Length: 165
Image (cartoon, rainbow, N blue to C red; front, side):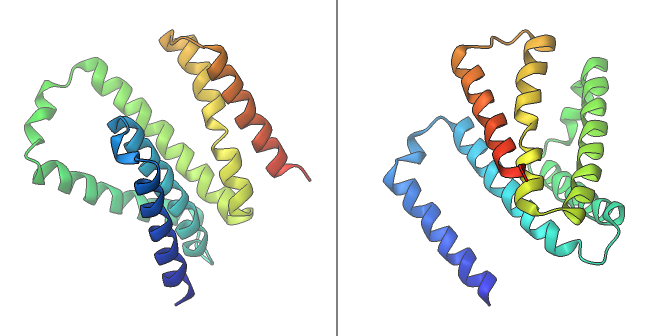
């Protein structure tokens, strides 16, 4: 009952923010990124509750199976199954590497959630942004501006403040 009330309040707050700050006028990628962040936060909360008295590897496998069903359902529903045939060898290699990295990330994340507090584990997990900035510069040759460096530093500092004992 309390969770339903909290979720309703959060949904109303989100709708208020959308109307107040014209979020719908933002670039689509920003909206998707914000939704990703929202669902990532919900993932952490739901996972912490769902991990009680459950092996974290089993929980990750269950989560992965459900995600598998949902994503393939979307592919079939949207009629995109034939798009698989246009994937190159490079696509397959890097999508496979991404899948391995995702799987390892989820396994470690669920174990950390099981052992630690959600706020601290999530803060460290979001530290992946700092790694992403560095790796995107090294491997993708994406530019690193002063704005990106300052933002990355603030994220790192914020992470350290949250986990500092």
